[in-house]
Image (cartoon, rainbow over all chains, first blue to last red; front, side):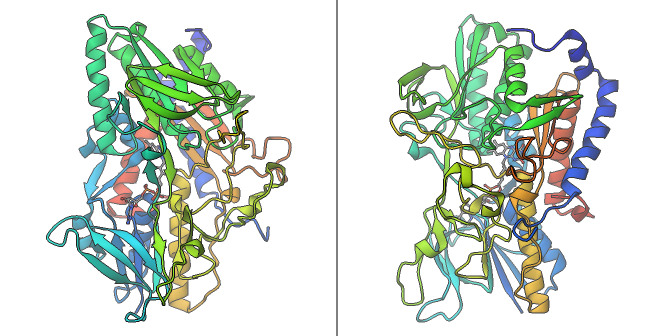
Length: 44
Length: 485
Ligand SMILES: Cc1cc2nc3c(=O)[nH]c(=O)nc-3n(C[C@H](O)[C@H](O)[C@H](O)COP(=O)(O)OP(=O)(O)OC[C@H]3O[C@@H](n4cnc5c(N)ncnc54)[C@H](O)[C@@H]3O)c2cc1C
C-alpha cells in the first residue's frame, strides 16, 4: 500500500461534519446536472 | 384506445410503465411483460455482494403494485417480434412465453399499438469459456441472486483467512468487450473495505483486471474531471485510490477462459497470460437476447429490428474513431422501420463504443463496450413514454422529446465502502456522457465543472440516499414523479 491520500485529506474525506455539508453540496450539484435537461444533438 | 406493451421491468421498462400509467387516461392499456416477478434496484447489488444488504432490501414484488396501479402484468418473456402481425392477426404482436404460474410454458400473442423494448442486456456468460456465476470460484453481482452467492463464497474465504489462509482476489471484467466497469470498480473497493473490517486485509492480494486501456476509462474513454480546485484525469483519480488501498491492476486484458481459480487472458501485446485467484468477480459481456422478428408473411426480418440489440435512430455507418461524433448517437430510440417500436435503456444498439477501440497484436478486439447506466436508462425511457403519450393524445407523429447521450449528463455515485461513519463513495458526474470533442475540444469532450469527481463519506450517504429515493420512486409512492430519473 502506498499512501497517496494525505492525513489531512483523509480527515476531510471522513469527517462527518465536513461531509454533511459536502453531502448537501453534492446532492444539489447532482440534481442540477440531472435536472439541467437533455436534448438532441443533430439540430443543435 | 391505445395499447402500449412494455417488455422488461428493469429501470427503463418500469420508468416507462409508471410514467405512461400516470399520464394516460385509464381507457388506454399499459401492459408489462417481464420474466422476473420482482423489481430490483441493481446498483445496490454491490452491497448484497458484501453481505451488508440482503436481497429483500433491494427488491419488491411487481404484481401487487401493478394490480393497484392498473398496469397489466404478464410474468413472461418475449420470444419473437411480429411488427406487421401475421395472416391471422392484423395487429402487430410479440410472442411471450409465461415463466411462472399455471400458464408456465404456454405462449401468447401479445398485440400492441406501441411497443417499448426495455429488455436490457443478456448476461452473456457463455461468451467466456468456464465463466458462470458460482463456478470455478468466479462470481457475478449482476443480479441479486448472483450477488448473494458471491457474498456466501466471499464470507467463506474471509473465515479461511481468519484461520491463516493467504488469498488472491481478482475483480473486473470477464470478457474482452465487457462493459459495466463501474460496477466492478465499486465492488473491488467494497470488498477491500470489508476485508479491513474483518481484520484480514493483510492476508489478501487484491487485483483489478480490466479490458480498459487506462484505469478509470469506464467504457467512456476516461474523463477529465474537476477535482476540488484541480483538474485531474479519471485514470489519475482511480490510480490514486487503488494505490492508497493497495490494489494492483492488469489493463488491456481480454479474459477468454476461466478454469478453477484461474483466469486466462490475452493482453494488447498479444501475450496469453493467466492470473490465479481464490475468489473472483468478473462482469460478463452483455449481448442482445437473440430475438427473432418476422413480417406478415412469416419471413425473417430480424435484421430490420436487431443488430444484437435493437436498431434505433442511430447512425450505424461503420467509420474510424477519428470520425465518430455525438450525432451518431440516437435521440428518440425509435426503430426506423417500425415507428411504433422503441428501445430505451440498454436494449438499444449503440452505434459504436465510446472508448477508443483497440486490438491486440493478434487482432483481438479488446475494448470496453459503451455503458448505459441507470440514469440514462431512466431518462431515455421517460422521453420514449412522453413521445408515445403525445402520439396518442395529439395524433402527432413528430417526436418532440429528445435525449442523446451526447447531450445528457449522468451521475455515477460509486460506493467505495459501506458504513454510516466508515463508508466512502466516489461521486463522479459527466456531461455529456458521450464526449463531444467539437463542443469541448480542450477538456476531452466534456464540460468541466459538470464533469467532476469527489471522494469521501458524503458519497456513501448519497449512494444510500439514492437507494431509498429510487426504491420509493419505483414503488410509486405519493409524489414519486417529483424524483428525477
Ligand atoms: C452490479 C451493477 C451495479 C450497477 N450500479 C449502477 C450505479 O451505481 N449507477 C447506475 O447508474 N447504474 C448502475 N448499473 C447499471 C444499471 O443497473 C443499468 O444501467 C440499468 O439496470 C439498465 O436498465 P434497463 O432497464 O435497460 O435494463 P435492466 O435493468 O437489465 O432490465 C431489463 C429487464 O428486462 C427483463 N427481460 C429480460 N429478458 C426479457 C424478455 N425476453 N422479455 C421480457 N423482459 C425481459 C429483465 O427481467 C429486466 O426486468 C449497475 C449495473 C450492475 C450490473
